[in-house]
Amino acid sequence: MSKKVFIISLGCPKNLTDAEVLAGQLASAGYELTTDEAQADVALINTCAFLNSAVKESEAEIKRFISLKKRGKISKIAVTGCLVEREKDLLLKKFPQIDAVAGINALDRINSALSGGNRCILPATIPLTAPKLKLRLTAPHTAYLKAADGCDNRCSYCAIPMIRGRFRSKPLEEVVEEARDLAASGAREISLIAQDTTSYGMDLYGRPRLYELLKKVLKLDGLDWLRLMYVYPEKLSPEILKLMRDQDRICHYLDMPLQHISDNVLKKMNRRSTQSSIRAKLASIRKFVPDIAFRTNFIVGFPGETEKDFNELSEFVAETGFDNVGVFAYSREPGTPAAKLSGQVPEKVKIERMNALISVQSVVVDAKNAAMIGKTLKVLMDSVDFGRTFRDAPEIDGKVQVTQVTGHKSQVTGRKLSARPKAGEFVNVKITGATGYLRRGTIV
Image 1 (cartoon, one colour):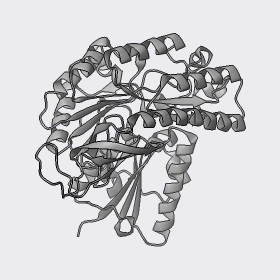
Image 2 (tube, rainbow, N blue to C red; image 1 turned 135 degrees about the horizontal axis):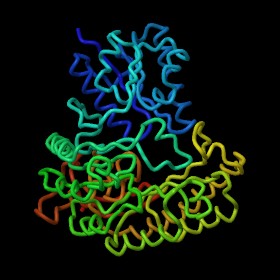
Image 3 (tube, rainbow, N blue to C red; image 1 turned 45 degrees about the vertical axis):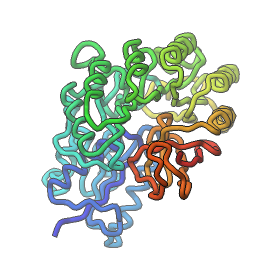
Image 4 (cartoon, rainbow, N blue to C red; image 1 turned 120 degrees about the horizontal axis):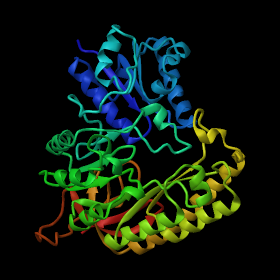
């Protein structure tokens, strides 16, 4: 009788792609995956440790499963992911009830760790290649494709280089083959991800090769939407923007974490951007792709951030019209250069600024929602009731709640529409209302 394993993956989509490799490895070793933790023999926690809050969340899940193990609900616990790299072998000393620990470069050895051959596997950084075994954990119609890992940008607040190591790209043809497999498995939407997607290929080929990668992936059959995430503004070339303009299968969407707009703060963050370069890049992008949808993140309360710096950021958000914005209060991460900076902002001020910036963005979203009312948009259904436009990434951005009008005739076939839309189908939806990041509409 096969053992059942329950996998929980915390943090970002990049972590989720690692969990899919772990799932493929365990399935090939005879484990049965279950989505019901009450049925599991083994719990695998793929952790995040990017921020202190993520460390606490990861440790809370470990403690929860240790409690279940003590009560005989599960027999083994495996821990993988960023917390393993951040804590190293200290993790087993802190939580001796863990049965197996595998680092991010040992995904293919998770079965060995669980089998007791080597309880703790923490190899050094290795060249990145496409996984030989992978089991998708997303919905069948949408998938994430990690083209690279690690980061060389050395932003002063970020622990990723300490956790994930230097920037490493997968060979171009391997990424294309992985994309082909995803499309063949039913993925109509692929989100291309990395710590810095625009640097793809720099380490292998001496120059970025994202443009060539996109052109090859766009030739694949079965793919309707290709989405770009984690794009650095300085490295987004005109040729990529022209490709976005000319190829309707690339979503007119860019996830571009800007972090701030004040030159004072950007310099302390060790970002390559300046206020001038960011504004110029956004204007250039909109010139090439007028209907572009922007997602970005901002950090407030960074060491040395003054009231003037924050006001610059607020005014920038109010005037730029981002579609989706994530706002984070600065987290003082041990081992990062920013943790040693003077001018640390009080926690109360950080929270006040975070809430204030969220309020500014809420006004922007209200205006965007008002402009959508009455328009008909193409929607990719994630379930029978909810879908997304090209302006929204899966599980991250907004949704469209879709209502089927009984007896309504299709404008294409003239037949009455009776069946509800299925996940993975595209439908045209007339927007009738919106609240925050939830839009509502009817099929036309």
